[in-house]
Each structure stands twice: as C-alpha cells, then as structure tokens.
Image (cartoon, rainbow, N blue to C red; front, side, top):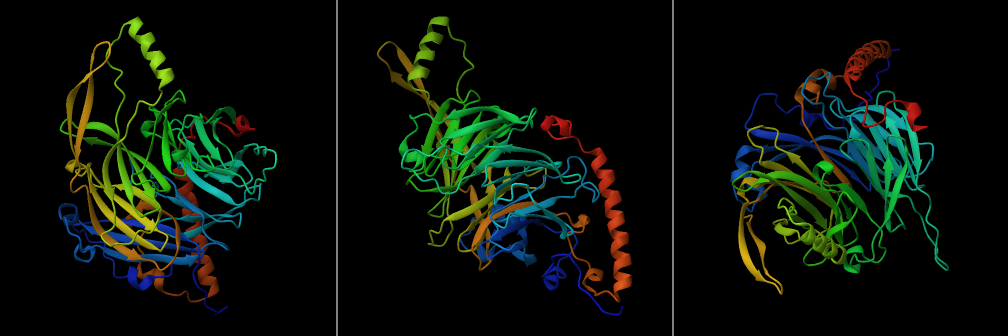
Length: 504
C-alpha cells in the first residue's frame, strides 16, 4: 500500500522543462516531433527570437534560438516509420477544444496514440490486417486514416477509435519471370472536401481514386508513357501523392527523381526534376501571397538526397482570355500533342551553412502564429544523421517581375511571358539541434501552454501511495472524459461519411 509508483506519462526530461517560463516573450515557440530508427520518439520545444527573421547571419549559434527537450522515450518495438498530428481546432484555443493527438506507427503493426499537450498515452490501435503501417493521415480532427503493406486503407473515427471502413488495393500481377517482393500503399491524400482520396502503391505505375461517400474505388489512372524516365526512375511507381493547394488545380505525384503535375482531369500538365538531378524524399505544397499585388501563388518544396530543400514557383495557366471556336479547336489539338504546359520556376535552394550533403529524410512547414506575420513561415528539416535544422522563411522578400517578350511564330506573332524572380534572403538559418539518432520522420505543431503543454512543479512530485494515486488518476480521467465528450459533441462528421453503414 505504501509503495510508490511512477506516472504513466512519457515525459523524460523534467529538469529542462522546469526552466521554461510562461511569461510573455519576444520569441516564437513551437514543438518538433521526430521518429527514429532507434525506436525512440523525440520531442523538442524550439524558441526563435523575433529578430532572427530580419537577421542574415551564417552562424546559427548567434541567433539565440533555444531547443528544449520535452520527451524522449521508446515508443515501439521496431523503428518508427511514420507519424501524424491531428489538426488544431478552429476558432477556439481553450484547453477543452484544442486537444491534439499524435499517432505513431512502425513495422510492429501497432499504431500508438498520445495526447500531444499532456503527453499521456491514449492507447494502441491494431488494424485488422495485422500488417506494417506505411503512412498515417489526419484528414480532420475526427478521422484517422492508415495504410499498410497488405494494401489496406483503414479509416478510424477518433471519437471512440472505431473502424469505419477498410478499403483494399488489389495486389499487382507480376509479369512473366518477375518476382514482386513486398507491396502495399505508399501514400494517400484526401481531398480538402473529404469526399475523394488518391493513393499510390508499390509495384504499380498508376494512381487510384477512392469515393469516400460510398467507400468504393472510383477509378484508376495509369501513368502515361510520355512521362520521362528521368523523372519516374527505374521502378516507375509513385512514392507520394498530394493534392495541390485547395485541390482546385489538381494533384501531384512524386517519383524517385522528380514530380509530375496533374490537373483535375488527370491530364499531365507538367513534370520537373531538381538541378542537379537527385533523388527526392518529401514533397509539400504551399500557397502564399507574393509580389506587390499580393496575389496567391503556388509553391512546391522538395527535399533531396544531397541535403537540399528546393523551392519552385508553379505558374498559373492563362485561361482567362476568350478565344474563338477555331482557335479553341487548334488549342485542343496542341494540347493533345503537348499536354505539358506548366514550367515551374526555381525560387530558391535552401542548404545548411555547413558543407555536409546528407539526405533530408523529412521536413515540415509551419506558419507564423502571429496574424501580423502572414508572410513568415518556419521550415524544419531532419537529415538521416539526426540533425534538425530550423529556417525562418519570409516570403515578403520575394520579388516577382513579369516582362513580355516577343516571339515570332510561323503564322503570326505570339507573346511569351518571362517571369523574373528574385528571392534573396528568403531563408535564414534559425538554429540546429543534434539528436544523435537516425531520424526517419518528422512533424511540427504549435505550443499551447494553456493546454498543459508545460509540466508544472506538482507533476514532478511522486505520489504518496497507490491508493491516493489511483484516486487522483481516476478523478482526472473522469474530468478528461467529460471535457472530451463536451468537445466531441461540437465536432462535425468528416467529409462525405455520414454514418458507419455508408462505408460497409
């Protein structure tokens, strides 16, 4: 009865946390979560001074950026393959409505769930396919989607963690004399409307579309042979699929050495590789206002094998001018002959100040929390040697000048728009942290001190006995359940899924 026990929360660094202050400061804070080959889940709190965004310094040690460990523990029985954080609540930042969930997975076929701010273990999900998970996605705060090596797409409801549906991608048939080792879904992307999803699988040269209203396959697009081999690589399979900002312009598929842009009609609108050509490991899109007019522009970020983050500007197609029927027919013929009409423009290449060229395994982009700093973002990268670097991005420094250049054609004179882009000082190194572990995946999230994100002094004390601990723990669990029930009642159902029966 008098034996003391430790708390269940996976908090390993309390001494450093006690040094943190809740007083307002001139710095911006957010947290970094990284998984590693060593089965360890690493959590950091980074505080970046406001002066970093306006200081072009090559020495990250002089910026005043601080990294404080939040947690460090073994999360799985095997290497951590992927992780995801549920999106924040909209319109309310109170502790009862800003609960965010961290999901992690590994080849041990389990999905672990944690409360991100209180850093408590919520339990473990065991998908019915009992296969290693390949990706995790939170399309909304009420739904979690996981994919695995068996070709299944599992949809869970976060309210009670019940399984809504399991979609299955058929295994590809091997060619004569070919032996396929392994398989499964490489990546999945849910449309912002929540009604459609796209997936790419291993050993498949196609992208699948899923109707989430009915829970059935909507179609299969085989990659056209016109895509250059330099982009697709040897395998020719899609490694990642992502919707472009808003989903209105279409989607993009990342291959081994490049990216292919598809329109909403699944027609190839462009393809590009990095210069020099290198393998790519991660892709993300961002829509930010650029130029004097503040027009929303589409940006593409690529992480490469040689330690770069390359930023491209995706120009918009000019379809606003009215054309006659004859010219429209001519344009259709030209589109059939040459469908690639988007040529991305290189904006910037973000590289570390050191001379190392270690591959970047993952990166994430987080907007500045202040509404007065809409043009500023934070880029967090992690390489395979365990070094996490944080960059401050200021898109207000980008200058776009469009000049028309005359181009003489065979039939009539045509004009071609040449865009001159200057992005000096776009990225500023804010700081770096060495985890001494081989990082496999990374994500970032805002820090909310009001949501028990900081360990208080009372939490560091040990309990007096088992009875008192069990009573206090049960009381806190009951209070958390009541708050969670009150919060979930306000949540809306995800996407087109109204009831469980629709997915069966």
